[in-house]
Every structure is written in C-alpha cells, then in structure tokens.
Length: 495
Ligand SMILES: Cc1cc2nc3c(=O)[nH]c(=O)nc-3n(C[C@H](O)[C@H](O)[C@H](O)COP(=O)(O)OP(=O)(O)OC[C@H]3O[C@@H](n4cnc5c(N)ncnc54)[C@H](O)[C@@H]3O)c2cc1C
Image 1 (cartoon, rainbow, N blue to C red):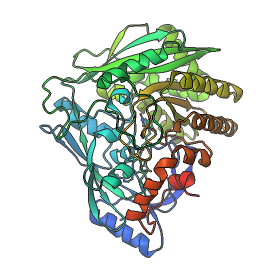
Image 2 (cartoon, protein in one colour):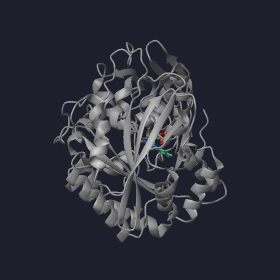
Image 3 (cartoon, rainbow, N blue to C red):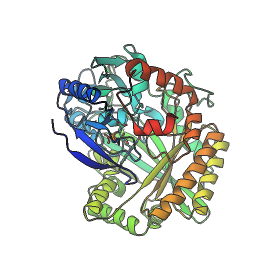
Image 4 (cartoon, helix red, strand yellow):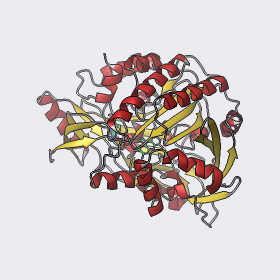
C-alpha cells in the first residue's frame, strides 16, 4: 500500500487538503488501514473520485480512496447491477445499457463513483419521477470502524442504510452496492423536446406535470418535520425493478432552465423520456465530447456574462420550440463532462477555473418558490454576479435518508452555478449564498448538501435539526471512538 502525501482539491477549486492517500484493493487492506490509523491515533476519511464541489471528499487525515473497488456485474434477469464503490457512472452505464437497462438516477458526470454518489444521495434530471439515487439502492456492503463487514438494506442494519446513504462517508467504507435498473429497451435513447415561455407564470403547472404523472398521485403539501410517510414516485420493485414488465419504460421527466435577460426571466422546459429510436438527433449541450463545447466552456471562463448569453441565445435561436432531439443516454446524462474536460485542460495550463454550485430545496408551494426565485435574482444582481446557469425541477419527499434535503419534504430545487471566479467574486457570492440560505431556512426549505454549502452552519443545523439526533446516534453506535472523520460534516453539524 502506497502512502504519498498529496494536495487534493475540490472540483470547484475553492478548497484543498494535504492528505495521505491510500488505495486499498481488498477488504482486508481496508481493515488493516483502520487498524493502523487507530494505532497511530489518527482518523480516516473516504474518497471516491474527488468530484465534490465543497469539502465532502477532502480530509487532512488518512484518506482512503476506494477507486480500486471497481468491478461491475449486471444481473440481467433480476434487473440489477452490483458495483464496486469506486466504479464510475460512465462504466456502470456502459455495462448495463447493452441489455436495454439503465440506472434510473445518474449524475451528470461520468467520472463520479457509485460510492461517492451514494454518500451524497444524488439527484438527476429524472428525479422528478425517479426520486433520488437512494431509492434505487437495494443493498450495500460497508466496513464499519470495528472491522466488521455489514450488509445493509431496508431490512438489515436499516439504521445504517438510512444514515450512510447521503451520509458523506461518516460511518464506514462502502465497498459494494446493488442498484435496481430500469428496462428501457435497445437502442436506449433519450428524447427531448423543448418548449419556451416568456416568463415563469407557467413554471409550476409545467413542472408538476412530470411530478403528478410519476405516481398517479397529486403532489402533497410540504410536510413538517422528518420521518413522514414516504411518497412513492416511480415505485422501486421488490426483487428487481419492472421484472414483470415486458414493455420498455419511457420514464418521463420535465425540468426548466432560465434565460435571464434584464429583468425578464424566460423559461426553457425540457420534456424528456427514454425511447428506442435508432436515429440520433443530438442537442449540442448533450455532446460533451465536441470541441465546440470545450470552446464554449473556455469562453464562459474568460467572459462570465457569456453563461447567460448562451442561454439567451438558446432561447432566441438555437432551440426552436417543439423540436425533438434524440440523444445517446451517455451524451444526455453526462452532459457536464464538457465542463470537466475544460477544467482539466484549464488547470493543466495553469488556469484556476474556480466554480460554485449551490442548490436549494424550497417547499412545494408556488408562492414560496416565486418569492425565493425573486430573492435569488435580486441577490445576484446586488452582488454583481450573474449565474452561468440556473435551473429547477420538482422532487418528492423521499423515504427518510437522514441527511437528504427531501427527507419528509417535497420541494422545488433551485440550482445556481457560477463559473470564472476571482477572489473578489467568491467573497460576494459567498455572502449572497449565505443570505439566501437564511431566506431558504425561513421558508422551511433546505440546502442540498451535495454541492457547495456556502452558509452559516447554524442555519444548516436548523434545516436538518430533526435528522441530527438519529444521525449522530447511528454514528455513536457504529463508530463510538470517532475513527472516521469528515471535515464537511464536522464544519456544518459539530459544534
Ligand atoms: C461535473 C459535475 C456534475 C455533477 N452532477 C451532479 C448531478 O447531476 N447530481 C448530483 O446530485 N450531484 C452532481 N454532482 C455532485 C457529485 O455527484 C457528488 O459530489 C459526488 O459525491 C461525487 O462523487 P465522487 O466519486 O467524486 O466522490 P468524492 O467527491 O470523492 O466523495 C464524496 C463523498 O462520498 C464519500 N465517499 C466516497 N466514496 C465512499 C465510499 N466508498 N465509502 C464511504 N464514503 C465514500 C466521501 O467521504 C465524500 O464525503 C456533480 C459534480 C460534478 C463535478
């Protein structure tokens, strides 16, 4: 086992840590590392592929990377895939797709690992119908600090199951995960048609279309507190998703991006579903491999206002309403790989390429969302920091993953991305995001912990107050002497 000290960096480039990184290849090696760290009085933390925006994957102690746990095995008849925690989403999709199967929730970069996204309980543009990633996890294997290898599911070590999914690696090393897959047929494609509206007046009606249809259930009003009854969306199967379904599932979704022009907020709705059309009619943003995409990403770095200019151009010219695009599942899903390519290249040639992405979840109320959107736009205007991208979708309350932003609460996400940041802008955006987090708290919303969390920790603690007691109870049970640390969890939740 090698033990180099490395300077590691968050994806957004705002944070670094000096860590002793180990890459064990077997369960015994992970247990040996736990033992060594305990003997040396050090703590350990885990890392997937390092694509977190904030400090989620950074820690200055002994950092255990699970990247060598990368086996993937598809069980076609059970419609499940079992993966090593270090397997990347690009590789998981590549293994499942030839069978007409796809993971219902995949993040927008192919480079993130399953262990990393399990630990953040990630979302995708299909989340209005498919929910969050945790919904599709049927079981996982975790090595807890006592060196015991435990299988966790909704029925076995359920406390650990609900804490570790979205628990940012605070409970042990996840080494293997089994996901349910959705049968979409072959060739698997994603069809999108775009509709345009000159303002946000129809936002709620349109976004709720996907949300309503997902479970033939009308959206429920936001619930107070946590641990409410789960809201079913696309129901995960017992013993394999859709095992009995002979027909491919289209799995529909709707989300919206904004094109901001002066005081006008114009909305672009993407209505999307799986299909098996052979012919590709790709949309430009869904071709991350194109050099044109690389040039666009670089241009946005040099001229930040181009971010919104791009969306306005798309609104005015590039995407005529009602045209239908057909993308490969890889291109559609991993559209942010263009941004990853640009950042990698930029950093190689010495450019800083710093970025911030923060996502808020506002309880499912038109009035609250409109009020929050107005506050965001005003806040960014006052801070002179136009966003590169701002988008929204609807999420159902989930089944109770403790630190999930939708634990017991349905809501609208509002994601804001900033690129091309200098120190001065970072200060202004940080203040703006902190103020908006406070506003979000006052509205009964939560900050989504997966991306940046530029917020007063007291506000974040208040948002997750009901979940913290069970979360730290599970921590105490499985890690009583605190072998596992997390700079991120401790910054936000430990006084
Ligand atoms: C370009 C880009 C696009 C993105 N798109 C989306 C998106 O569409 N939706 C979304 O929700 N998020 C998205 N994200 C966020 C990203 O998916 C998460 O940050 C994810 O956690 C990164 O996975 P990773 O493998 O890089 O994990 P890391 O960043 O290395 O680690 C993340 C967390 O997981 C823990 N961890 C990792 N592996 C293990 C393990 N095996 N056992 C225990 N703990 C572990 C770490 O301790 C850490 O807390 C995106 C990020 C980027 C950079």
